[in-house]
Length: 153
Image 1 (cartoon, helix red, strand yellow):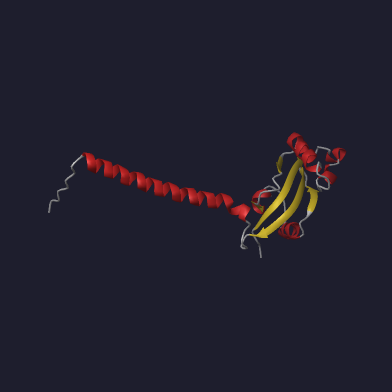
Image 2 (cartoon, rainbow, N blue to C red):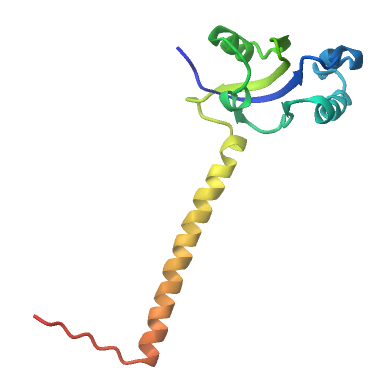
């Protein structure tokens, strides 16, 4: 059964010809030291084809790895084991570091829902304000002008 996951993760996609081992990126990507993320981020900005380094935000795993050639069993294994790995195909080397995960059907973390909640609250406030403004305009027009409605039957 395919699960839809949300993850806190890091991702890096480097073209095959770039020598990441010279800069020890495969070790720094494990984030064993505080400065590792800064160095990997700097490296990614220079050499990566694509990368994602927001380890504080939840993201759908499918969105994160949409252009990584993963097989289904690798996908689930990567997530469930919170894997820190890298692998290559003919064109690229891919680094994936899963920090945390949740199955989409579970109650998502508040951080993941915060943006959606904000949009709902703002939409409701806008609706209430529009209704209030519309009522105020009608009242002002009624005070200034004598409005008569005639029905033709």
